[in-house]
Length: 411
Ligand code: ASP
Ligand code: MG
Image (cartoon, rainbow, N blue to C red):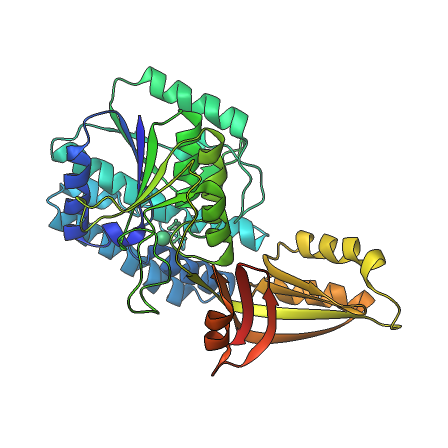
């Protein structure tokens, strides 16, 4: 069994979906195909949630209808029959989903429809074009807790469910949803934005897959983001540890959570270009090879929060656990930590949870913050590289070790 994951960009239009069919048709063994929502659907669904949450129902309805029509037009273009077209986004997101008291819970009920519908469409298209397959429903199989928007997977139960579903099936190809799961009470959950890679890695772990392939719109894992830098270099092979470091630093190419599940079972994870499937791309695997080119990773939209004891006493030992308890409870994602005798600074992703966390931190500390920042991590740095990168930038903080430099810079 192998696992293929296709992100939103690979299925954004009829041509993309036809290309996915070609790639899948070449695979001879058993295969699980994990798919994200089509194109930018998840962003559009977030707009629906926010409009509904603020009682702007007319706006929500317009957004919902646009998403629905786009999916149905795509199905039509792919030659799928009317019944399949009409089944897409048949649930009216404005009128048919009860508004729960909790934003995150409501978010998951709405946003997970992106993957439910992309997978339905892809499965139907495969069936209509010679790839018989079964559609697996992650909300019933991948069981999570109720940490909505960042649900924790019950791996024991989910592994049992998924192995059971495969055992009972005569199919060789399975299509399923990335990014989503469900609680044992039947509520839908999501695993965190861009979480489809993580779903693919978990499924591979559960079924002891031979490999996972993430098909992307880049040639593989590069030493810098090709959208920001010319002359990038492909890294053909890297270790699981190196991959975690890159992903955690903000490399967009792969979700940080997706490495551990494959590493645990020594499953190689390939990153390959969907528009040039004959190319090998990159592989993350058990290797002692070190990456031998400098790697530049940007993590955008950061906030640097600095805490100082109100009475100027020595802050560190007594306060660390208190600070990190608050950070953890508010689900902040810490990208860098720096301390001095009287202050501690943390750089975090600027999410909607940050304001509440700062409020709570302010009870015990004097808190200041800067926003509109990016974190630049350079792995395999040298004094020359660092000097060059520090020129012409407005830098708030620099942290260096022998091989890695991290700069918090104004955007
Ligand atoms: N569709 C989800 C997102 O855009 C999950 C994913 O793409 O991995 O965040
Ligand atoms: Mg995506």
